[in-house]
Length: 251
Image 1 (cartoon, helix red, strand yellow):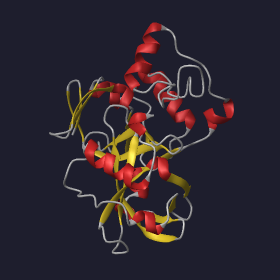
Image 2: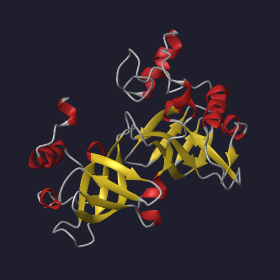
Image 3: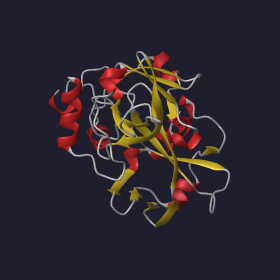
Image 4: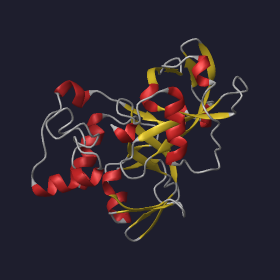
């Protein structure tokens, strides 16, 4: 449940993410009861508190503020112009500023966490560094489009298909999508496996196919992922070690 500063807004019905950096840019809130037909987008920049155990999230804005935002029609795609209108309305810093600049490689204006970008804005030290072409290029994708909600995208090894995407694993601090969850459809001994988004070599959006830089023999080394169990660092250590992959937490 997503709550404003003065009451509940609704549940999350979709997530929009950056298909280049695999980072969540917006939650799409189900507001049919009080704002029917509109697409309410809320950025992690505006989040105050996330309670994973209770499935709740608080936003630093009132219901009236959110109601009066430049919300698009539900079926309307999200353009860069629409994003800019949201930035200007809410006063959110533009996450594109500083990308590729001197701050660092982080997905939030060069910073690792959205709050760091907000702090930089408050200090007046935001970095420019986004080209006009990048600024106009739409690169938001819907989680519902890719996962099992709509017969998830096929996942292919370098030598054949191994399953389809059923879910995503998101870090609730930096909002990066670290893993996709794959249902192997009986093609491997493990029913479900985790694959790092860093191992994705290509996504064919039109044909709905995700290519992974691994072969089938390597996939057989991956320990089964229990979807009802938490992901521990020990599990990650084993996953990366079995495949000989560089560990993101050590880079």
